[in-house]
Image (cartoon, rainbow, N blue to C red; front, side, top):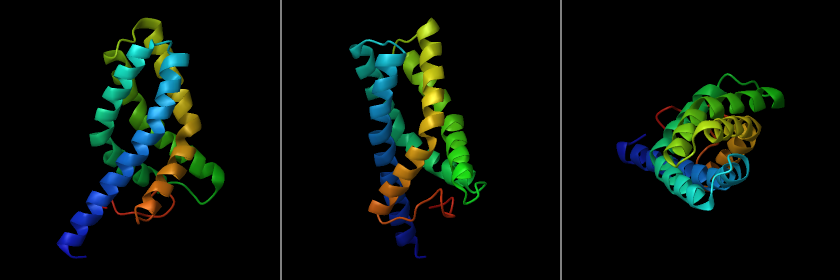
Length: 153
């Protein structure tokens, strides 16, 4: 593959993964922060703005991480659900805990928010993986977690 084409593909993968992460987790983050962590709307706004800013540099590394983790999954539905959830929780929960702590959650709110996010991400691992694959397809890329994708993509 020519160098120019590789750069274009990497840029497209960055845009696809970033778009998917921001759309999906802005929505779910609002729900968790307001209704589970008990944060005020001002704190939620701050967390979502900070979260969006942090999602930009994190989205593509997460996409690469997910693709690598998903290589362990078999074609079975349960295996893909399990590995998608492991990928999401292991990468995103520590980042999310830092976001809500910086945004004002503390003590039991921080614990509830982090545990809530971990539970949510366990449940949302596969739906997000499918959403990410769909967004990648819209951008003209192969779906990552269900088919082998190069770490350099």
